[in-house]
Image 1 (cartoon, rainbow, N blue to C red):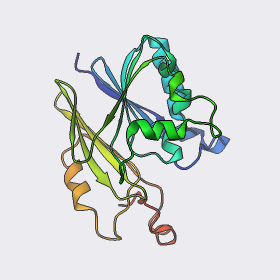
Image 2: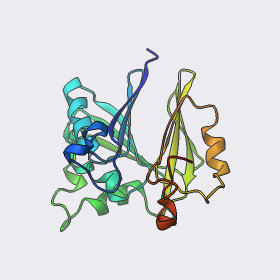
Image 3: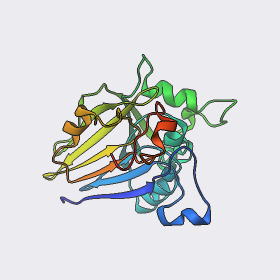
Image 4: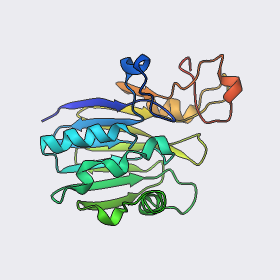
Length: 222
């Protein structure tokens, strides 16, 4: 099967936005589901991952990869409520490579899910969890026909962009990143060249950007 599909479960930044005026684009924070044939990849674990996980459990999906762009709260706050993590038959691989120090994927999750901030710890996951670390520009081979390229993004505390290549097509996920005004990041430009689809950081307008320069975000005009 060569199905290559994606579903946006969350596209908000910073905090969920459940107001009625926001329903057109949804209210949850970052989470993208990607289907490469029978393989399921989940990008980020914002609040959108709660609905994603519920649907995957309903479908009986027991094998998946979760790839973090970074660990600011809006990109990981849904992880403790990801149902497949508490499914004994499931195998879940967690990937992270945005750290600027010696932090690991495992330690990130353990530090996030611990008292007094949260009562449930990763020790209570009943799925088989495989923590995987990488460093951009590493290329991740998730299966013989699924390749994930990585690139470092310009964001406080570090972040990673992904390019998923499957069945002759490619999809880029470039979330939190900032360019110098009028000077697009050449590394990002080269990374996304020739891709079929891209999701990109559109936090601000060009008019708003000077007020928030240094926050690590871009404008939709860029």
